[in-house]
Structure formats: structure tokens, C-alpha cells
Image (cartoon, rainbow, N blue to C red; front, side, top):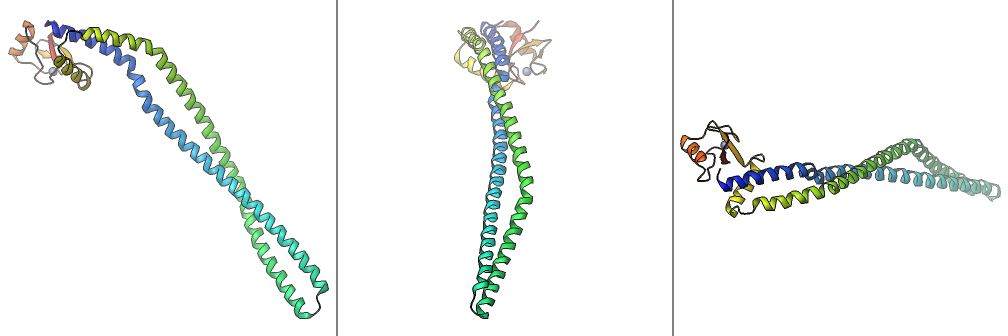
Length: 234
Ligand SMILES: [Zn+2]
């Protein structure tokens, strides 16, 4: 085997180790972002339903207080009826009582409607808050697990990266760049064996000329179909 190809084959072994060590860790940021988006959505829903409940409770109290004020005013007007001096004043007071009463009835109706809605709003506020709290616990558990996994792997990954530096030592920079590109774009197989004239990276047949060059090991041979770097398999 050509000495550079030999080196690249060793490098590929180390790279496969690194890939398997980092594969699931590399997925963590996306997973974390996805989970965070869902958590944020649940938080917004909980906040919104909490705010809707609070607003309804405030409005309900306000309407209650308005109705009580109106009742007090009606009482006062009723008392005035006893001391008015003439019929015109009496009629005017009656008219005013009627007007205040009408307003109070409207206020009470509005208040009742809100009271009826309160149970539903409370239930929604509780459900959405519970959903948020439950998901937050799951999310925090995920973060802890992710951190643990990163911590446990850190040593192995650092060791593999060191091995990688040693394995790539002596490979010409251009060839190393070519190898790195192939490793990324060819499913982690940049260097592939040739068996019975077939590239084992893409399973296409290579030319007799290339086959002879691979066996000869004097030059670096690429597969004409997939461009992988080839070596004589068996
Ligand atoms: Zn190929």
C-alpha cells in the first residue's frame, strides 16, 4: 500500500472513533433548541391563560363594586323620595332611580357572565401551568443528561483528537484536505478497498489500468466514480 494511503487508512480509523463518540453529542444542540422552543410555547400559553384569569378576576371585582355602589345610590335616592318637596322633583328622582337600576342590572349581567367564565378560565390556567411545569422538569432533566454525557465523553474525545494529530502527521496538506472533504461527503468512507476490481465505497468497477495502479502502490489512485482514495483490498 502507498505509505500515504496507509496513513490515511489509520486516520480514517481514528475519525470513525471520533464520529461515533461525537455523533449523539453533535445532535444535542438541535435537540436542545427544539425542546426549548416547545417549553417556551408552553410557558407563553401558561402566562396567557394566567393573565386572562387574572384580568377576569379583576373585572369581576370591579363590576361587583360598581353594582354595590349603584345599590347604595338607589338607597339614597329612595330616601330622597321621602323628602322631595313637589311632584316634579319626585318624578325626576324616580326617573333617576330607574336609570341607575338599569345600569346596575347591565353591570350585574356582565358580572354574572364573567363569573360563569371564571371556572373555565381557572381550569385552563391550571392545566396550562401544569403542562409547562411538567415539561420544564423534563427539559431540565434533558439538560442534566446532556451535560453528563458531554462530561463523560470529554476525556475520550480529547484522547481521540490527540491520536488524530499523530495519525495525520506526515500526510501532505493537500491530500489531507482531500481526505477530510471525502470523509464528510462520502458517508465517512474516504479511503476504500478494491476487491475484484470493484470499489468497495461505491461498488462500481474500476478500470484495469486503475486496478493495476492500485496493486502497484506507487501512486495514489482515486475511484473514477466516487473519487474515493483506493487501496488493494485482498
Ligand atoms: Zn468508488
